Every structure is written in structure tokens, then in C-alpha cells.
Length: 120
Length: 120
Length: 120
Length: 120
Image (cartoon, rainbow over all chains, first blue to last red; front, side, top):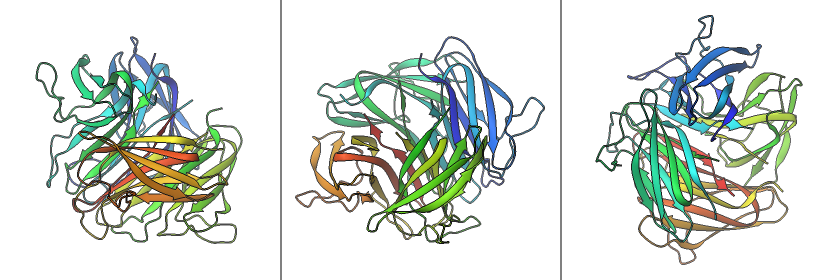
């Protein structure tokens, strides 16, 4: 099976502002090449507070899911905090592949970056 | 032989708009360091529909091919869909190295991102 | 334990100018998933001078730290030089994961790039 | 010793135009953590012509070298071609770490991308 069950992304940040037609955001992009749906736990780590672990998402079998972090809600309905540095750990019940991207429109025009997650 | 025969890229997206002189696009950039042409199958995975597997391309021996996904056609002549998130699996009959890049000119100026594909 | 104790980043550069509201900068983004604080040594390599090794930072247990290289000071109070190419080696007493990002606002709008560090 | 002696980068391209104060360019960013100078051979692969292998550069021991591909000359004085897709193989006599970056100012503002090279 292609993929891993744990991935980490040290550089997370949701810009607080946007310009133009597109909202600044990040996405945890998951590919599930298996035959079973992936149930995905996202844990967010911060510089000055304890980790928050109650975010969950699903990626269907043979599907991709570009999990928009600006839209994700915790089990208690809380959003991912904007404007503070964080890091992400992604845990799945089945092997997945994880890539992380940011779209930043906080100044005119837009900027993009991406990297594969780090897996063990 | 340098390379692998299977590569995946979770974050695929073709912007629907462009500005300036350059068309928004993605490219699957292949390097084939071997002595045999690489016949490459591209499978696209979506969030809400079954994968589409009938895309094929070739990269000659000792050649690179920057496969423009905005120009690629399936065996039935269909384009890669624009404006929807997808993921890509790249399968080759011989080892290759795969990098994936996006040029986005959907707002003024341009944005670029790139990453090596993930290989098993 | 997820991570490694040594990471390298060949492409470091602090732009000398900025525009708009955001200062051009780089960050070495660390995630420490362990139960012990990470004490981190940063060594900077140059094209035409000997390496400088007296930069140190800390990333708490179960915390991230996005180390702003434009704000980092050596033990003698020296900043990381701007406007010259450098490379970075990151050494930690405990396993960490390292990603490196640059925000460049030297021309109008902004540009971003990122990559996971290279680990052995 | 940290590093590898062979690295590949499938997505190479030198834009033909620039805007603002900065010239569009790519750099092969090398870090040599060893005690011996690295003599580096660069081979360029194309879509429609044979590879060109007569480019050489040096990265000193305990030094970085951000090899500017827009300034690099072959042993016969030829530049790296602009405006055509290429791929790069980097071979060194000693282990090095290779990252590849592009600065594109072909439209207003600037865009950046980067990735670690792929090593075997």
C-alpha cells in the first residue's frame, strides 16, 4: 500500500487577511489509494500553548481530500487559529500520502507554497 | 537506475483563470535517465467521483518531459478538469523521477509552487 | 520518536528589502513531538567565509517554534547576514522535524517558498 | 558524511523575461559539509535534444555555493538555454546536499519556488 499513517508539517500559518477574489488558506492534501476510507486525526502544535487534538476529517477510498484548514472545525466547533504559527501532525487509520500547501493573498497578487509532509 | 516507477502527488489543481501573458497551469515534470523510453500512465483522483485512468504520455530515453496538465488529453480526448481539487498517480514502465509544479496567474502577477513527487 | 537530530538547508537568503506590511524573512520551522525540550544549534555556511556556529534556539516539548532568521541573534548579539547566500545546518539534542520557508516582499506583492529540510 | 554524490531535478526552466530589479533565474544550491572541495558536474536534459554535460562548478569544503544557472557557462562558453524546459543531474566527487530554486519575475512582482533535489 502506498503511503504512511503518520505525517508532520512544521510550518503552518493561516494569514489573517486576503485580497482579490481568493481567501488566504492552507490545505492538507490527502491521497488515499487504498480500498478503505481513511479517518484522519489532525493535531495542531503551537509555540506557547498545549497541542489541540480534536480535529477529524475523512478521505474516501480511492479519493483525494484537500482539507481546507481555514474551514476545518474541531469536534467542539472551534476553528484552527489564524495569525499564529502552528505545526500539524496527521494520523490516519490507513496509509495515506500528505502534501501541505498555502495560498497567501495578504498582499496584492497571491503567493503559493507546497511541500510533501514528512513521514516516518 | 535512478528513479522509481510509481509517484504520487496529492495536491493537484488547475486554476480556471489567468492574467498577463502566461496561462495558469500545472506540469508533471519527468526525467528519464535510462536508455529506454518511458511510457507513463497518469491517474487522476477526485474528492467526489471515481478516478480517471486513461491519460498517457511518453518521456524519451535520456530526456525530460514537462507534461503540461492543462494541455494533456485522455485517450477519449477529454481534458484534465479545471477548478476542482485532484490528486495524481504516475506509473511508468521504467524508473523515472517526478516533480510537480503549478504556475498560477489567476490574480495579477504570478505564483509558483513545486515539490518532488512522493515515491514508494 | 518522529524526527532526526541533524537537518540541512542549502538555500538560505535574507532579502535586504521589503514592501507592503510584511518584512522579508526566513524561518526554520521546528516541530518537537518529544517530551523533552529541544536545544537547537544553528550553523550558517557561506560562499566565501568560514561557517558561523554560535546561534542557538529552543523548541519546547510538544511545541513548534518558527525560528525567524531575521530576528535570530548569535551568542555575541550578531544577526544572520542579509543579502548574501548561505546554507544552514540544524543540530538538536533530541529528534525534531525541520521545514524551511522564505517570505520575500522585495518586489511588490509577496512570494513564498518552502521545503522540508534534508535529514540523514 | 551528510549528503549524496548524485542529485536530480526534473523541473528546470529559465524564464526569458524579467521585471523590476531582479533577474529571473534558477540556482542549484549546494552545501558541502565535508573537508574536501566538491567538484560538481551538471548535465542538462531536454525534451527534444541530446543531454549537454560539459558544465562544471566547485563548492569549497565547509562552504555553500548557490550556482546561478543564468550565469553558468559550459567549458565551451555556452550558457544554459533560456525559455525551454530542461532537467538537471548533479554529480559530485564528494557527498553534497542539493536544493533547487527558481525566482521568476517575468510578470510584475516575483514568484519563488524551491525543492530539495532527489537523491538515490
